[in-house]
Image (cartoon, rainbow, N blue to C red; front, side):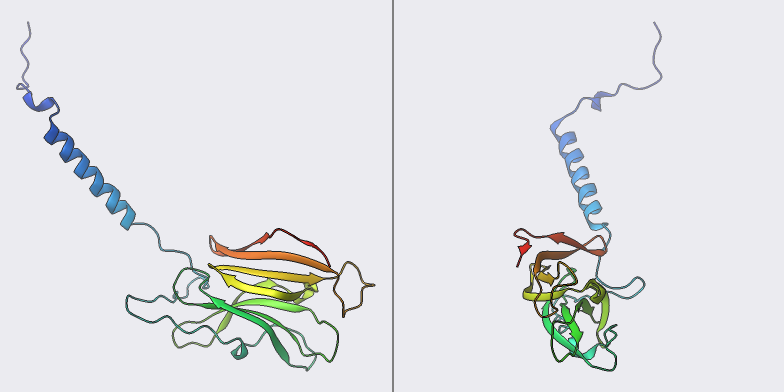
Length: 194
């Protein structure tokens, strides 16, 4: 018979105290892992400081859509903000503004662009996303709001070039939501022709 050089390990049998110590250590590891998660994505451009509010600070005011120069080619005419909605889209507790903008026109239904605006503490509002390009020849209907961080809109358009510009004949209900660093568009139920 060979005698072991290792002393008798009487503590190798689990006791309730061992289980309690193991459970406490695991809870600590899980809690630490929860604290080391990456920060939430924001609707700001890469490299810019996301606007965040510390406990007790008031959120920044929503960006004013009248203070922004829009990338519309209006041939010397000005721009008009047709619809606007404000709300927190990226979870940073500071509201963004979504604006439907078109060129000033005497008649017809000029196409609109839909833009997301944000601002840093003392900075001017700026465009961070274009949701609808005016080249798409769409306009925004009366259904335009932000609800629970989701942009909801009805887009009006034309089935063909023979449809008069005064009278869009198509309707599309859409939404956009901030996901993984971008606004993701989705169709909403009840899309139909007007």
